[in-house]
Length: 364
Image (cartoon, rainbow, N blue to C red; front, top):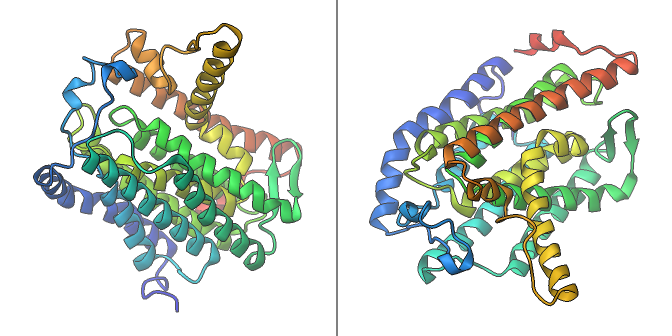
């Protein structure tokens, strides 16, 4: 059954998706922070011998985590109340978001109860993320016939058939973990999520038909992205430096999973690499750091680091930049990459003889 509010104009749905999560965050935020403090749900900080940025991050000890409960809770509530839950794309976005949020909650809970930065095992994380991603991919593949056609910049739509499933697996798991790695400075992950979400909204709004969506298909994904941006903005109110609460893995794993699923549902997996370039850089920096350490340990008898510290935002912080400087500059890079993704779409579509459909604004 379509929920009770989907009969109203799309513009009103978008307005509700924009206002409700942010307004609710203003009310819930202070109360959630007080509850988390009372529960002593403080964020564990890595010890100096493990590479923590002490004393820079020493003041973060005791700051409550698991604030992602508010972000994801409001996002899922908006989805159930305001969006068409019969749409397979919305169903998959909600499913992956919920599963990865539960995974993040278990990880945060383990860290808090053990008073350690070690949560659930890495293999358990990957297994649960893979199960959610494969389940969503199979469902989409059999429910949405055109979902296997991927938008390739400078080429157009390429139908990859059943190879869509491993691609979706890679995108969702990669996105979930990349956003998780980005969540290391006050406001960094939430700010970058807002930018990426708005970028995808613009791409879907102005190029719906050329991406093979059609306005009616692109709308549910745009509404979901509006809710993500609004929920993240409400959280950023309390998470900006100095943060009163951290989203924890509850928020970061779920937000990354949600963004990856949106890219899969809208066939913009490759554009995600550009629009979410900050997240990609964070993940790649960790991979480079690990591989270089192992390589030098084998070849030189001693493991060495490629970066001062990974993920890469800590590399710049170790280089003398303040937390706020790193965060704002990463936001600016995110804005540039978001604009680049939109411009790239316009250029490619222009080369194909297609113009961006500004009349799509009429759907509001």
